[in-house]
Image 1 (tube, helix red, strand yellow):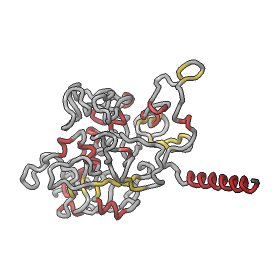
Image 2 (cartoon, one colour):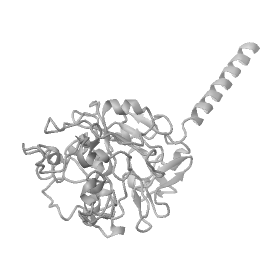
Image 3 (spheres, one colour):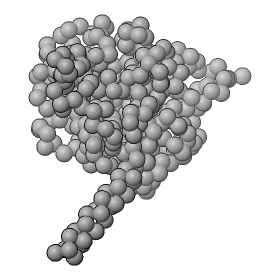
Image 4 (cartoon, one colour):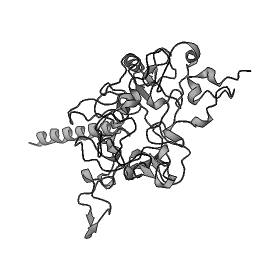
Length: 369
């Protein structure tokens, strides 16, 4: 009996050590630390509500906005043993921000500029440039008054598999999921940045694929950044959801921005192409060094070749321009959520800035003299 107990004790000790070692390898890949950092069992203490704005789903002490906002840190902050990305800075106009940008400019604190961010519930009101019966610009799905793709600024009740506010895009949030540590390729549920599809219900097994930077591009360079999957749409006219690309995800609400871009005459574009291969000729052939300010999308074969390491180069003739090449999904200091000031793009100025439009259209910035 003594020997059995001794073996059981030894086995239990080995199990504990194994779990501790496994936990050490998680790092910030999944939320760790005290449960009451994020959850409350009954939202009550001493006969009164613990959090006046609750209760929230999943016994959370606050919603997405509450955890991902900060008045002191522009990019990230530490909550227990976990690092939290900040997407809604409330302490003033941020000078630095993560890959998705920041909601500050569209929020009340930033002056409610509807042109500079997505209007999201608990951050800003309905976009004043879009009437209550309109949907997202370019929307082709779930149309009509009260349509599920109308706005992220109010609670959505039309489509049961589509969330509201932040979860109108980040549908498949699983903060306790162990998905590796550091930079890693994400190609399955819960998908890149929890961006998943909703058509067909919860069983619909598709979402955005890509290589996630381990600090959301708090540190960023040509060799330190996110990687996005692309699928060339130059011969199809439309880009359907479910192919794992960021452009397909954007087209879920902004479908008209991605359909029939070429009128039939080569080079006669009516909308800027998305998921279209950067030509390996003319001024485009000079695009070689990766610029995180103008990210590109990659083919399946290129993404597989990278493994978990982002590439510092751009390959014209293979890599693609996409929605996020020009826009930040949360918000930016510039109109239309652009990554740069469009009004400062002056052709023939000879400034040699090589950013913004001139990153790809390199010859357009040259002084004719």
